[in-house]
Amino acid sequence: MQWWYEGVAAVYEWLFASSPMIRQPSPQKSDGKLPVFVFPSSLNFYSDDQSSHKQVLTLYNPYEFPLKFKVLCTAPRKYTVVDSEGTIRPHCCVDIVVRHLDICINNEGVKDKLRIQVTEHGTKKIVGKKDIVAVLLPKKETSQQPEDNFQSLSGSTSSDSQPGTPSRAIRPGDRGQGGGGPSLIVIFTAVFCILALMLPLSGETGSRLPDYLHLTVNQKMIAAYILGIAEK
Image 1 (cartoon, rainbow, N blue to C red):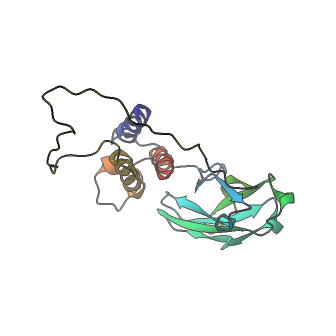
Image 2: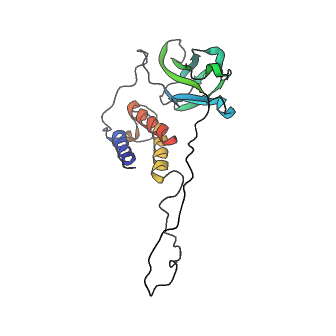
């Protein structure tokens, strides 16, 4: 877990290293290279798992201006998309439901691409795009390991000791070391990244928050990336 703590520390340092007096320019929409945030970055459908035949893409808009999106595909006859076009308000997200229509052995292993294309609201000029790889796999892999054979351990006891291990009362402060579920650092990081995405952008007017809580676009990109890792 050392790599995780180091990564989280690096993200915190990146998010808050910029001085409030230093302002980075807003993303340029005219060059067609506006970053598009979509999670997950790929879609895996499985022939033997009917629940996987429908997948959800989440499209984020961390900017202070609205965006229009459109979903394109290299194999449009194999997929259907609910609400393939729409508008995302600033600092909002939208779920795009993708369903695979042609589940057959001939399509297994074939990689298709879905393109999320965004345009500036009120115009038809493309300002950004993101490609998502979609593939149909034969079956969902499950790790099947042979059952472990546990046997008794031999031990030695002193002559004056009684058999068995002495028990003690459980105290409120006692915690197990191997509990299941996500660790506190993962939960804290996910909440932190969500809060970072909700903060206003640097240079945005009308906010009552202090300047040092106005994040740049690059800082929000890092927060969105870390949030995607924490969700897995």
